[in-house]
Amino acid sequence: MSPLWQRLRDQARQLTERNPVLGDYATSHLLVYSTFEDALAANLARQMQAQASNVALEDWFKAIIKASPSVAQSAAADINHLETVNPACPDHLTAFLTFRGIQAVQAYRIAHALWAEG
Picture 1 (cartoon, helix red, strand yellow):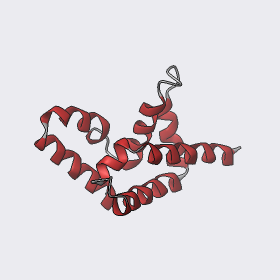
Picture 2 (spheres, one colour; picture 1 turned 45 degrees about the horizontal axis):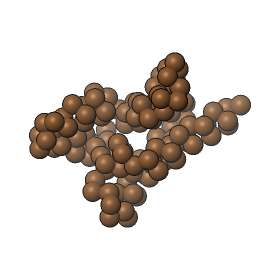
Picture 3 (cartoon, rainbow, N blue to C red; picture 1 turned 90 degrees about the vertical axis):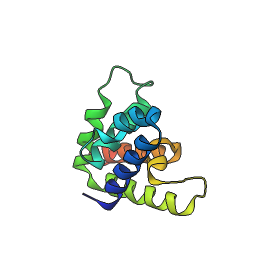
């Protein structure tokens, strides 16, 4: 388990303990997934679902991320960096779940991986 994935899971568990109202959110958006890659794919799919409601984006994104490991590696680096340099970002969990810029860059990376595949 990567250090970032462990931190995200720990922060989600702490959030659940501190604020049970947000517990379901933390569980359904992060704790139900066994890997960072799966959680990343699900989070991006959830954000884009309104624009493509009939497409199984989560499974598609998982396949792309597994085929292009650099997508998840770069996402982890982005989240670590954002949490370090942005005073508006209190922790890794907030960066992962709510920062639109992080999500936009990861969507770009998935699109680039598709483009590179041909």
